[in-house]
Length: 112
Length: 112
Image (cartoon, one colour):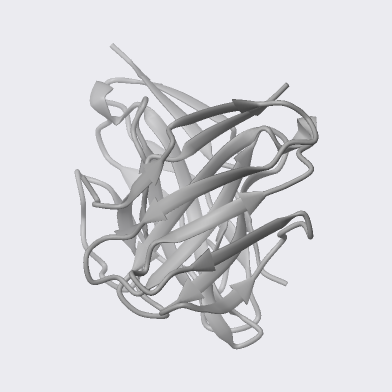
């Protein structure tokens, strides 16, 4: 077990709604990363936080936002959900800014 | 822009046969490359990191900068090797952060 915890495991919601995905990094890890895995786009980097601050931003939609809290857990907020947002959302963490990333089990989001 | 290509979506071999999962990349700087594996119903796990140059579960991978490749090899496949394999490149985003760019993945099926 890598120690990265994601909740919930599954989320079913409707179009137009807003959801929050939560990630707790491994103990001692300062960086948190979010990735989206969809059938058509594969695994894509969304955003990275390091010690509470945004570090790098990838292909993240404006409807999506994230933050990292003082206790280092992170939340990914997805709003105005569309059918195409249905995907697996992975969180990963690493010790520093440029170290090996360890992945959580993911949250499967289904937008109906 | 950085890109990782895994040309085979599916690779099917018999137990005991050699395996080679192909990975090609494009990156303007000095790349750091990884192989991640995802067994059925499990999270992504780090399998190999090119700078460590070690063999894990019998798998090896050599970075060939001339051919921009990082192919994963195993001389004798085992049924328990059946999984999804992702090649990933770690590169900074605008000189900050540590995003992973993933290939599309190759599903390895090892038949008895």
